[in-house]
Image (cartoon, rainbow, N blue to C red; front, side):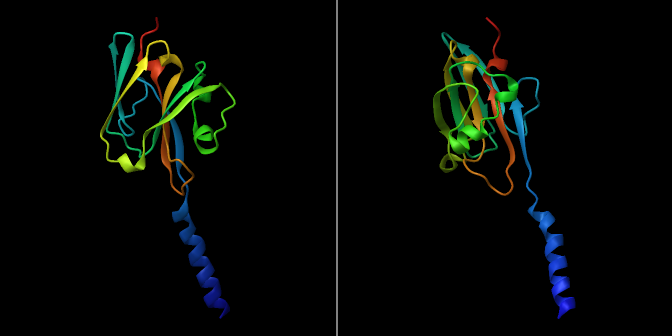
Length: 148
């Protein structure tokens, strides 16, 4: 009986490595190869920028507008999405742009005013914690436009 119990516990411990959690944050900019996450194209259109996202590899996304731009170290918005807490700037707007119901979306087009592009971010993640999250990422829109 002891050998059977020991064997059972040993097998359970070995199988736990299959439960390993993998989750990594990526800040998407033109200099970061992000084809494994999505493709980003930004076009100037009068007073706006048209952002075209294609081949999106996540099922949930948010457009986050802050009252000011934040440093790359503060562009991980997981805490804001999961708990509505973000201590680095005032959140002006948070809107869901992609949901799991629309998960088959291959192309997403978003217009952002030139005056707000430096403080607007596109964030992709799961809305709550999961066992194996993979990559979660922010598209830093200001890095895709020319400084004025």
